[in-house]
Length: 286
Image (tube, rainbow, N blue to C red; front, side, top):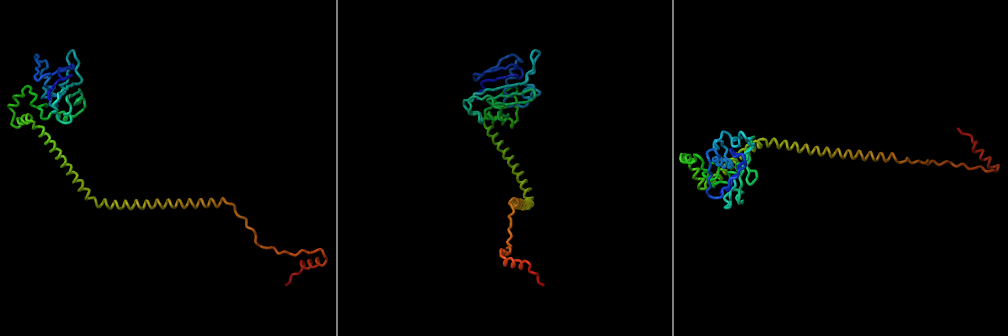
């Protein structure tokens, strides 16, 4: 991977947006003392994820934001963007498919730090995962600043080993191994917590089973009561409808079945008249 341009805005002495083009394999920055040559290297370290202000020659991370002058107001944010040529697809992760990768970091006065890769918001860890084994990084050997040579010469064997592993391309595999071990450790801790939960639940299993039986019995009885109530309401409604229908029908008239005794009619003759008179005036006996 080759660095093709550096874009700075509000970073230390670069108040105005500035773009440094790096067209060749060897590029030199020449200028008087105090013009900001070292700030360019600090910008490269900072955008690659440097989190210690002392490595950027400052007391706090807010010192990387342009602090203003007598004729210029302080900047509200600092922004640095590095554009890399990835024609050989050496970048790690999902970004290896892009021929050009733009890494950007933005810091505001309230302390909010944001990272971007090709204008997509990412984490600081994602920035570091793009360059494993390439020598690029906040403290990798590809960036040799003031005092770096003496630090490498005077470093302890453990520290020197890190530089050699990065140069040999072994660091990315060791990083993957470390991540895998961390995930395995987290998985073991999760399994331990699950076993504790199972042990506690098994202790209460018998009690929970009895409660479940009581609850099931209660639900069955409650359903039976509801069914009986519905049947009772339906029966009362049917009886009420039958009583209402009977009251609305007219009462039938009953005829008497007693037969009257028919008395013979008296004729007009004198003999018939006498017989009728004797019948009607018959004295009572006893």
